[in-house]
Length: 141
View: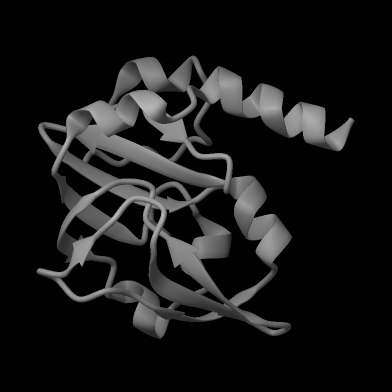
């Protein structure tokens, strides 16, 4: 997956794989039948400082909307759900030693899991950057 250091915006999405979002504050970057996902900027702010992460194993099958790992903060442990259905082909093993990367760089260094997708059409159910930003603004206002 391509990496960019800028915060994703509708304009920045034009220069690489498009980011899509879930209502649960996860982002998805897809390319060639694979998708990488993580927690959005807003999602990590709501969660608080991440102190530990439990990720699925490479080769695991995950189902859209089903728990596939855990995030531990100073306050709580919460499951995170896969935004798509597929097989885990990579995990961000750097998070084992540096879980704070989710907070520091959620869209790039802090990605969680990469999947080989079962159904690319599931991507159509995710929000565009503009739709996500509008949802967040509505929640704040």
